[in-house]
Length: 540
Image (cartoon, one colour):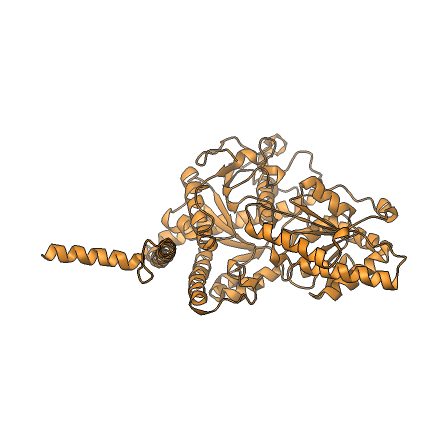
């Protein structure tokens, strides 16, 4: 994206307010979203939907009278999105230049900051990048009514305590970053073979970052999560947030889907088609567990050939988000292709990386079924989109899908093994009318529960709640006479010292790799030695 890193268009993206009744018009609010990488994924889709929900409802929206109230129409916000990266070849259409409705609201800052250090330190670099993006967002818009952050809460104290922003701060937790490390899959530990000193150093390094995550999250005026499952996980891994939970400071806001992006399914046509594929739609990441689908499909093919040779075996399409800059994306796509070849199903499997919005909608609408393989997924927007598109969903019986899929009615919830997936796919492949009936149920279910208008109303309530809580926080700070401020600053100084030590350790590792300093030397040691020499020279 060739845009100035420190400039942002002041062009408003709000729709004309002429359709809003004068009694409902309030002072235009300014909401600033801060997100690390505005690519293609569930988190990015959520941020875009939050931004769209902050705008006035379009004039031609078919909104039920129950949602046409003062609270909904009064949000009327000017939206700005700050990010450290947004590639025009790997982003949603809403932020594509020049036609995207939010394209003029996106500011790319800190693109010069590295995402890794020698292939490691990703979490540390992400923390530094979000700190910088937050600082630039505040510097450009100190009058913002609300700052909305997600993924990492590291910069929340920067806004609320050090910069003393006059607005409120809301944090949307997709899932605790503590549970998204390379040593875990959505919170489940995995064996990685790392032992010894290096493993101990990594645990210490990760422990510091986890402490910072837990400590900084509490500074938010309001915390939102995407599912009851995520709420439970936050409560489990961050026990110090128990007070916030008791005060109902942590609320659930289910992500929506934009129903206008999907063509209404034609179930009669689907019943007659014989080539509808089985579809998987995920980012090409190992934690998405797509390998289990390839094993299950190989079992399905073998089973049907021996037991029901007359049944047509549908093709399998593996599609999803793919970023060539992401090493894991590149490696995992290669791994999946190799596995398909090993299982001798490559002739029936198509890989479609980085599908566009139109192709995505087409796949979901024409799928015989959609198989969603992530285990302990935080929420999962794909099952929602699939059900609205009229396709039944087969997913692991864990995490967010347990809250969105009606087992036996809109799809199947199965155990996390290839035989269970194979049996569920077999039921649908052998009974197309079952797939159609489930598709009809899912379409109506999503239309009623996860539409954009219901989401807009819920989001507006959350914004009002965050603004109210922000006022309470600022009043408490004023009335405390500085006592509260001293306390939070002390914690902040401790965090600064911790971050400084992490940075010193990273620099030491890099300098040792390039032979600048010896194995027994360190940045802290060299600084201490320098000042010791200076002191001796003064005494002489």
